[in-house]
Image (cartoon, rainbow, N blue to C red; front, side, top):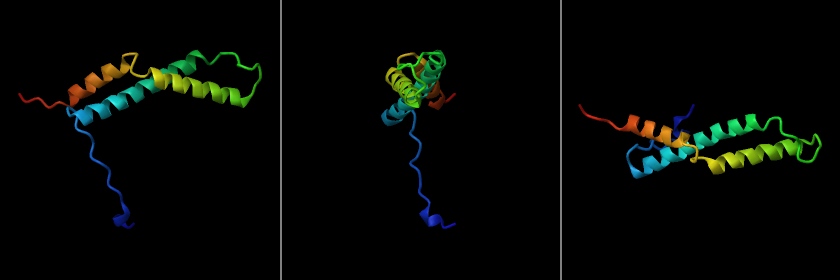
Length: 96
């Protein structure tokens, strides 16, 4: 393996900085969107077809709709805020 082609990743954002907090908030909102999507999938699994057919496109449409709905509502349920506060406290180094 030729290591000259290995790409280096950017360092992880530092929590407590403006950029680090923004990156952490973005990730916690994405995590909340995943949780909300899972809840919507479970709640709507017995929903009737929109067009009264067994069209695979209908299932795809509903899945995409639930995904967009969960992305739009991310950050509004409180999971993201709790996770952000918990992780930002873990990242702060306190001296005793």
